[in-house]
Length: 232
Image (tube, rainbow, N blue to C red; front, side):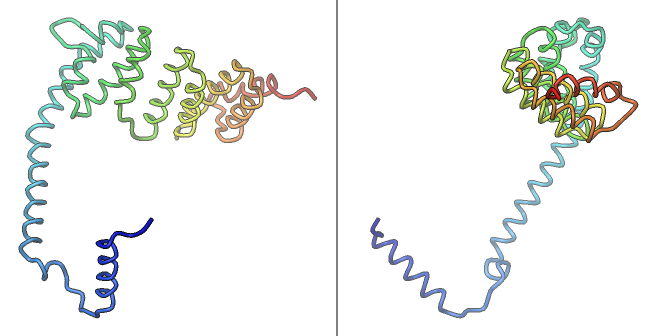
């Protein structure tokens, strides 16, 4: 494509500029007012964030923790629908709290609780939506998040996505018992799909990468390996 005249002029101008040797002038000397303005704006942003954090988020966090109490009681009793929508006593359920306190850690936890409640009550699409919103961090929660998503898609009979999430859960796990749990699920689902070679790889990862005699699934893994191994 032919270059427009304006483009050609810009190229020539750039080439001419590049041939001129000029001292490098620090931006704070060249545009002192601009820099001061930018620094002032940054200071305002920082101050605004601190005010928001301590005057808005912190009180909301405290309020959210108190508001979750009744829903957590119902969750602990496996009363998942009540925990989700109406835990009683005038308290709100996890579905409302997750939205109401979305800027807080407690609100984030409500996304997790709401996902589990929906999974347990058969509302798999809702469970996926809440779990997608859940921000899992640390050595345990990222793997749990992927694993629950794997469970949701398994219940929906979308086994390709379920396998993908179980694989992610196993890869993200930094604790043996969790890695073993999801690798076993991965292997068993591969078996269900008739993919014995892939199942064998999952089971062998358990034996090779996560040796832990305190975990029953690791002690029993040879039985699973034998079941899917090619006939000798």
